[in-house]
Image (cartoon, rainbow, N blue to C red; front, side):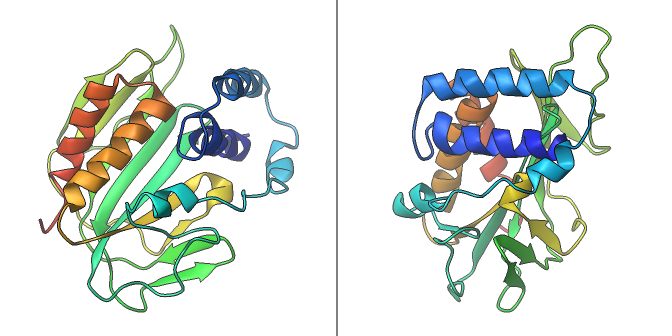
Length: 230
């Protein structure tokens, strides 16, 4: 069930909330599907999710906007620029309850590879973390926040936890599989990096999680302003 929910959320990101197309009708349909999915208790969902195909144009808009390079789908580069940059990994909500975004310096040549549609990132770099969880209904259990210093910001449907500073390296290698709702992006480390990452994250936070745009932009700017090594 978790995998199907992640794929539906990824489809919303690409086709209902503006990264590829904006379709309010599709957004409503996906809300209904996710609500139904959460009402079910299992039974073959994981097997069915493996049959979902990743759209062929995934990553196209990110690339064409000049934000950076997607590390998934047909628009990913065969090799990364030697000038360095930052990787950003977005993990879609699990069971509709939790999502995460982390960014860290590019691990360098030979440390990012591909496995099918997925990116495999071998990184020993510190990272900045943003975690989001859906606001709980009365009596509903929600995932605990990470055990680290940070701040919590509350919104109508979601709460966000932003780490106060860069964290030690996380588990490696990272497998970023779009079919599992995990997407990896590469931002060039040249002038305007923070602005490009802020704009991308603001659109994502506003579109996927329904944050007011100014609040999403402020949260995205704080995240981008805490990139390790900047």
